[in-house]
Amino acid sequence: MNPLYTLIIVVAAVAIYTVFTYFYQKRIVKTVAEEEFRAGYRKAQLIDVREPNEFEGGHILGARNIPMSQMKMWMKEIRQDMPVYLYCQSGMRSARAAQMLHRKGYRELTQLEGGFKKWTGKVKTKKA
Image (cartoon, rainbow, N blue to C red; front, side):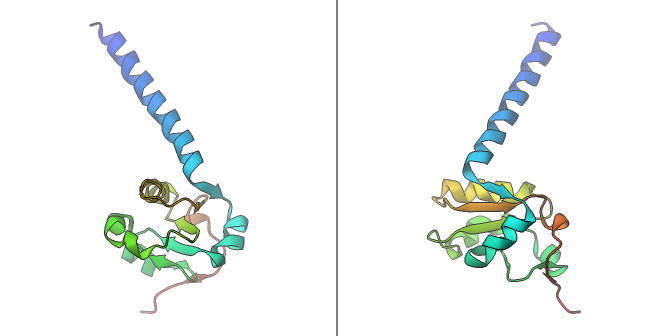
């Protein structure tokens, strides 16, 4: 097979996968700006999916730390009958966590657009 055809097929496959993932993500998790996130997270389970060292460096007041790397182990601690608000540093890990939760039956999933790095609200840090 001509290398050009192989390259075109690979690029097309990646593009199709990217488009599929984008629309799948939009369907399962609601991505909201900080204002809307702030308005809803107090009536929900607020989960920071960053690693513990990132969480201790600063997190949204009231958040629980369930790292993405340990999500399967701690998933039973997250109630299915309440909305789940997720965030990470930039939005990538919270999107993956939402996919994982959705596969296990969670339906009211919301993530913070831009992640913690865009957060301007109250933050709690661990005292040294």
